Length: 325
Image (cartoon, rainbow, N blue to C red; front, side, top):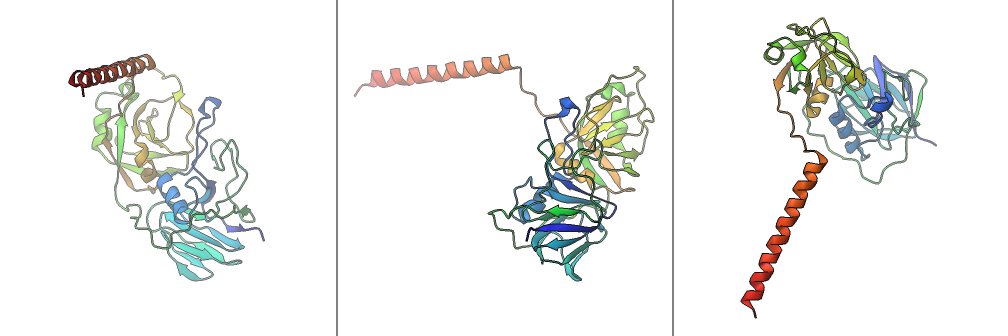
């Protein structure tokens, strides 16, 4: 029997995700992938999968599936109450779903997005090298619906973890996010960065995998005219004319025409993706990483280092020759 999962109920939104399809921005194709990559990777590691194996991302729980062939599974991210044929199972642990058994997920107590990984991964056909659903472009498999059958790949060689994962659930209170100022902070009025880093911003109900609109002090534009469209990244805080920032998440557009006042560091993007409507975000300034010099400068530095090593070797050889036997 080929293993698989029958979708009986999809909840608010359930999609197949992996780590996305990077490298296609020039073609107008975004990365997509898991909104909370750390939780996604953890779920795969728990069942012994490669970290990039496809899994199911749910928004506010509600998923209901039936197993074909029996699978080991783990759920991370937003902690949800779960049962397998009426028997309670815990998130952040590995459990078995026997052949024909039904797994039901309730609503999470904290956080927004949960990840269901099964041993072997979800084996839907890849598109441009990824099995991720991109809700903005429509690439990849469609969001899950009742009646879908998700095939499961062959079991990996690594054994699953047989213990509870010592991971703290997403916070229920304010979420602190590190953000690098710029690159277009100068297109905002003086004091805009102080307002961003000095006041909390609440997550509104306008939230999906593309991004979230925030409510707080308005960040006025500097009146420099219209900014030409330019590339954007996950974690970018774009400021439209309303002055209320929008935080881009996994399915964000590849270009944008409003100034980006700051960019949330990649290590904190997953925490942002777990924020629920009404929850407050607090941004803290973070220094930009150092940039490497141009290739010619790097080559010059490498050449100088090589010359210095050769000079030291020559000095050592001369010392040995002078000392003699």
